[in-house]
Amino acid sequence: MEIGRHIDALERAGLDLVDAAEKAGLDAAVPTCPEWTVRELVQHVGYVHRWAATYVRDGRTAVLSDEEEDDAVGPMPADADLVAWFQSGHTDLVDVLRAAAPDLACWYFLPAGSPLAFWARRQAHETTIHRADLQGAIGDIAGVDADLGIDGIDELLMGFYGSRGGRLRCEAPCTLAVHVTDGARAEGPHSWTVTMAPTGAAITRGVTGPTDCTLRGPAGELYLALWNRRGTADLHVEGDEAVLAQWRERATIRWT
Image (cartoon, rainbow, N blue to C red):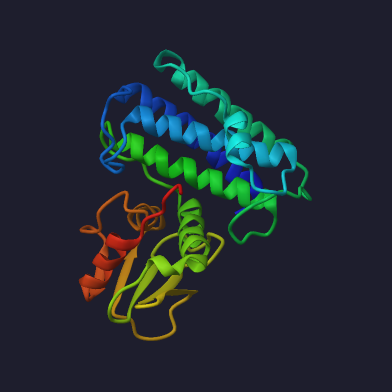
């Protein structure tokens, strides 16, 4: 996906996040983030937006210290001001990304074509996934477009777990294939192979041989399922479902 499309997705997700937060109320539980209430999730995403915007706006090439990070984010607002605080930070991040030069140099932490491409992509998916969390607190989670879903699956598998596969350890080696069944005209890969082993995971684009388990479905649904934001009962699963269960148990992305 192009940078501009990531920024557009970020903008839409933030607006939908606000709508869901206002409908749920700050004290509501978030089923897909069981340790958090709506309040804590809005605080988290608002914090991340301000943190990310600082790197892009300032062309910051070194990681912020704890003190610098606190200064960049500022104090957490009272409940009455929390949604407006979130909206201000979200709008600022969108504006900062749109105004950034293509050759921006700053710190980033996953493989990407450029620092700007990284931050636009990461914040689009950060906000989309947490939009889904907050919608889940009030009812059904809205769908995700095929292009964004394919891009998000690729970021999750090749970005997070391609570079941090040590988290996906299992006693006996096993392979999970992921196949997108829609988005034929969408950019990017449409299948991946995840090989989990005692030493961690190796992940590749494409499927070239037999696998222990295959997960198939529309890109947007696979995206939410691989992020553990929905179940897989209505998706197409072939082979050893225990392999998919290994993924769902071990595939967690944490802030720290």
